[in-house]
Length: 345
Image (cartoon, rainbow, N blue to C red; front, side, top):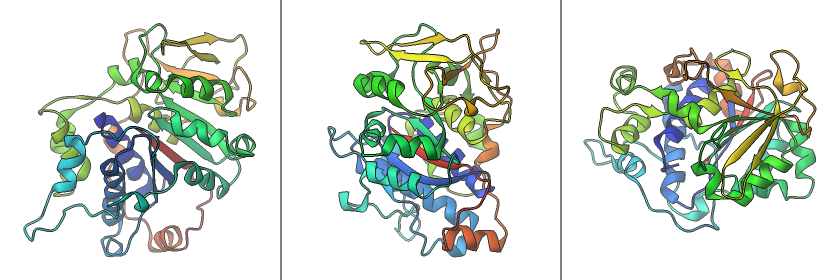
């Protein structure tokens, strides 16, 4: 979070879908050592909680945000600092958050493991929108691979460049971790490569028109601070997030299943396999299979084959009172909703 605006857009998409009852976020973590990145994630969480139920905003604490602590401290970027510094007429922050120091964040591996433990079997999806550094550390915990195989139905990765692209940022940032992830992750993987997000752009016109439902929005302020307007942003993380949340909607076309290998220079190589997944349900491939990986592909015109409106998931609807109370206050799992664990840069 903070490196590219599409991480913030993906987070808004997921919280918007959660407000509509489509998913439930159970874990959010950041792979860069940056307190403002974690604070921004917390601010977005609190913003959407208030958008769903304004009376709930005063005491809502939000999800714990995991923060990497073993890397080089990354620099703040305008897309983080501008929204967090925004004040209202009384001089108070427009977007509240509860992260001021390291102790206000969560230890990443424990956070992700505990999120898996609390979920029903095969009801979780993991979205990786940054380097694999922290996610592979989860695999090193005792019993973690068995836990992941039991709880997780899919890992959606925003990373790589296919079929023969150059080293992609998320992969080359930690090549060793990427190699380990693609070799050892025990569930099906769907990769959304650089070429998909680059072809599928989030329109600047949407920022100007489709967020008018609220006078202030942290992701809108981040978008405007990231780069001089107007610009259409790539949707690398958003594509992976939308597929993980709604894999059966037909927004994307998948390649045939195969294996993904990370080369020493950070390039990714996809090798198709002769076997096919069951029709329209790649998530049912045998966990741990060498043929349990696929990638989102472009159509013949070069565009990403997706017909959904990104903004669909960004405006939450107010849920029925009982659903709100059950979901927010007691933490009871809502049966049938995919559980989402989100990892970002």
